[in-house]
Image 1: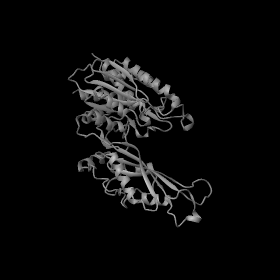
Image 2: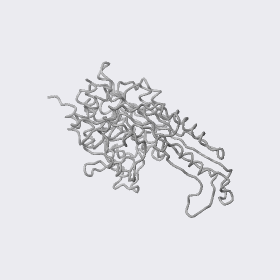
Image 3: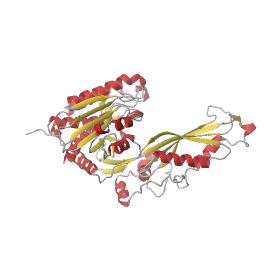
Image 4: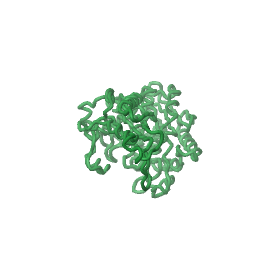
Length: 455
């Protein structure tokens, strides 16, 4: 009897874990100039493993920063669909002194979890697809052509990947793209996130006098820039929590009744949000449930505010300037550049003649959404149901993954977020971990996903 790819994955489960441990031991911290060689070493390790499992072409391709690992296998033929798998091999910084129980780059298993930096974000999740591909190729049963795009700069915002994708559109041409860099609801309840928010990040500077002044000598006659900026910021929201910027909601696609009903199925109870935040009372648009405010509505948030003297003791200064950081999380169909311009123009209108202001765009990312009725999403749903034994629920995510929109825009391809992590995995924090069970279920589910697409 011929071995199935699922049988192969179970038979080689111990080896798959040990290989993942090898990759996790490489401190591929993309933001650290002292770790450039380690980032290169991780890219080489990933490329070597992709060659070993039988990919027909494997290249380490340069960018203006850290390299991209590209691989392909076209053995399923011209009539078979092609799947592009995206992931990243770089990780966030991690030091034992930052609160880790054990060395962040010496993976250990405790209570059924793999503890190591990058275990969940994203080495473990991306590696599940590599092992799924190995299981298919080793048993001669891949129904799809495979391409891999594994980058080394995701943790620093992928500054060079967009240009690289545009330059290599033909190389990356595919029918479906899959990304496993997200989480599901619970270890026993899979979920599909089909929408992520975009971002317009800006800073606002207000200045008045030519230098800091004595508040006793000039207070009451000079408009304090800190007060002026606070007044401007306060005017950016309406009393109901909605954003008071003309045109801000013009391009927002409304949530349909059917979509709201589906999202309610995966909604966490209010007690969950209360435990997570510790706030005495929730705030925001009353016409929308808490989970809808996070995933289905755009926002304007103040991320930082600084002005004048804030050290120990007292200093009666009237500051010359004040600065605030503002981020707008955007939903499908909104353009981050347009939102920046709307906010900029509104702040200009709100700025009194007693001070001057400037708004500068710092970063932008487009929102992304894949219609849940898309056949690729339905294939993912069927794969989860087989791999987990339960039908997945559907969610909108509140965060931003710029590459999802980049791939949709540049390749005109549906993007599926096939997450194998949990929100409790501690990504970016101390003691990041990845469930052993989730790793192996992820491999099995990725195999099912490729098989479903092949149908």
